[in-house]
Length: 341
Length: 220
Ligand SMILES: Nc1ncnc2c1ncn2[C@@H]1O[C@H](COP(=O)(O)OP(=O)(O)O)[C@@H](O)[C@H]1O
Ligand SMILES: [Mg+2]
Image 1 (cartoon, each protein chain N blue to C red):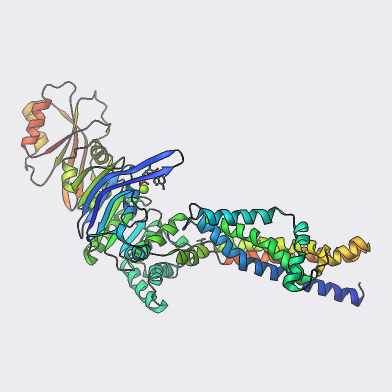
Image 2: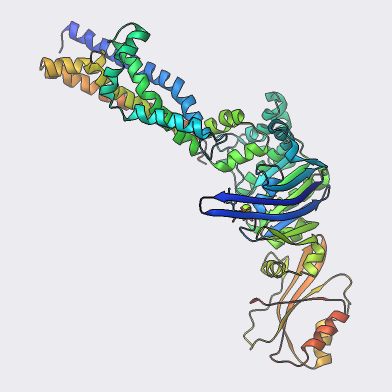
């Protein structure tokens, strides 16, 4: 377990055709044992940020502290030692294609100077943990994407790290495989008390396993906090967009796209403290006016079931504000929807 | 078909050709492999960028490679005398063949190593691997197939160069071909030597490619 503090971090890349400010004054505190999500669109600076956390990329400004010690103070040699405490997995797995599964997992152990026999024994234990005991002698080319990521996870765990950085680790995987890899990560977090940082562009990933999340846009943190909070009360436009794009629903009872002349749309979220009454039915009865349900989902947010609905009022309805108030009074979180549903 | 003298001369020629080819290729790799590794890691996107070192090696490689081999053979005669005591013969040819092979091999090593997926290198760095470990356990291992294919090409090229060196009295099959085919007009002997050179070339190609394929684990 380790705590990561990112302090006033900026990173500027110098290119021939001008410079790119990939990160601008980023501040984050990632608590020991957290599963911390960093979400943002492509090019937001997520990879750069996570690469600063093990100094694969040296920041232009600011500090990264691991358990209170600044990575910038280490010599090259100390840094290499420190990196053994920080495992990392990647979108494209990055395994040695010419080495067997077992030898891939042994790689970090050889770096630590472990002997072959000892390394093999430890690697076998790790392959057992990730459920690939029968693939020791296989080569990466013979494995599926999910299996390759499991090998990468076993390899990242070999040096008993206190932190695991995951850069788009499930982005190349199908939904089922993604779910099983996320389950494995959650299990690892609990069993070995490893702090996990999850980089992703998918809200569904954050929702499924993260306790905290930071939202990155154009190199800046625009929102951060508990996942539950951001999911229920997204403030920024990016947050709303990401939540809306979240297609990894657990149960879908979606209505088809509305063909009716569209009125104002709202997004409502039920949480455990919402009233038990049939809210929508009562709303319709009270105002004697139909509402269109464009989408309805139940989502698992950090282990808590959340209902989410996109409602559309009839065009130019005079009752919109009153209806919103009605819903709010019944404990529902309400957000705007500006995009197409 | 041939007199016993001619037959034994051809057999000796095969031996000399193989000796010159293998010895030059070996020495070529002794110097060319490290040079290729240094070119790879000192380049601007390399593990340890060093513009001065890169430029120096780059210029050396370009100069040597731009000298036609026949000219290089002549230029190197004094150096051969210094190193092996003679300006002609197989050993003298090995000096010039090696000199020509080193930059050529270094360039091929450089291109093989640069093909290695940057993601794998990044993963190794994230595990705390240093430059030496990455070169030894990542670059050379992952580029194995490409390195062997290129070594096959290098051997074939050096084999061709031995024939050229033969024209300047290096011995070997090339020497025989030039002496009998050009100076004495005994075409049968020249044809035999040419066929033998082709056969040697094919053997090198076939064995090299088979080995490269055999050791490649990327196929499922
Ligand atoms: N080595 C680099 N050199 C120049 N620009 C870079 C480099 N790495 C990243 N960038 C730029 O920084 C920005 C953020 O990139 P990145 O961190 O990879 O984003 P993300 O992972 O969120 O997609 C992009 O505009 C990208 O082009
Ligand atoms: Mg990225």
